[in-house]
Image (cartoon, rainbow, N blue to C red; front, side):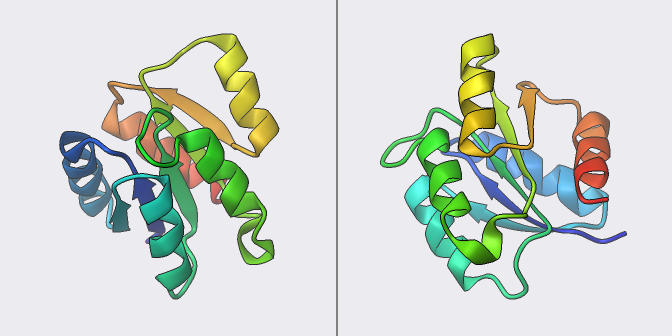
Length: 123
């Protein structure tokens, strides 16, 4: 199954790793450098992504703000959003869930687990 994924992370290294991982799985990857850029890329994507991956700690608009912004747009409310971050505190996980995140993966990520999580949340 080929998926269309939006990945939002301020780290070029992580974006490169995500692109490599997604390409090896046969997925199409669209990249953004922070939440502001993520919303811009999302609105330009056609078709809409099957899932979104976002970091939390980013400049201009962090991951929490990005998730809230995405969930405010009717067309994107049902898109699964996975948080991919170095953070692991339970209160941050709860804050992400409250904002509308679907799942949480701690960096560094294992490519097979990330692909499995994406396939699971996209049904």
